[in-house]
Length: 126
Image (cartoon, rainbow, N blue to C red; front, side):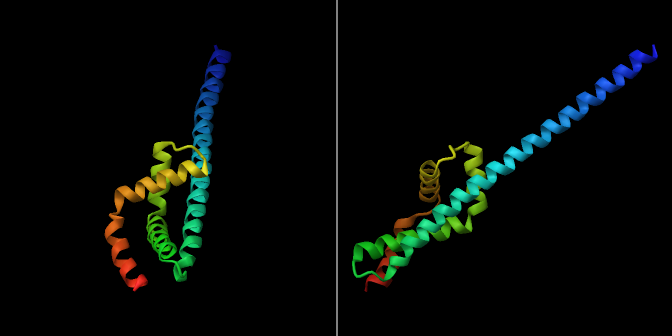
């Protein structure tokens, strides 16, 4: 009788600790995925900043592209955590191009860029 009780107690402890460990492993994967998405979003922001550095170009087309990159980079930077959460919720592939596509889509859905670009373009072209 005692051996059955001890076996039941040990079995219960193994099951409980197994469930706890599986929960911790799931959190570790989630944190790791968050870091990867964060790095991809930061890379996208750096690309926008690099393009924004061409704001003093002699070409009006390049200046317009730099203005768009400035606005887009500022938007993504200010909403970085929201963007990461959205990418994780959508389960976006861990690919820089796919993440850039999703970020562009989120930006276009959230902002009416034509109005912002028109104002900034008038200021920098004239």
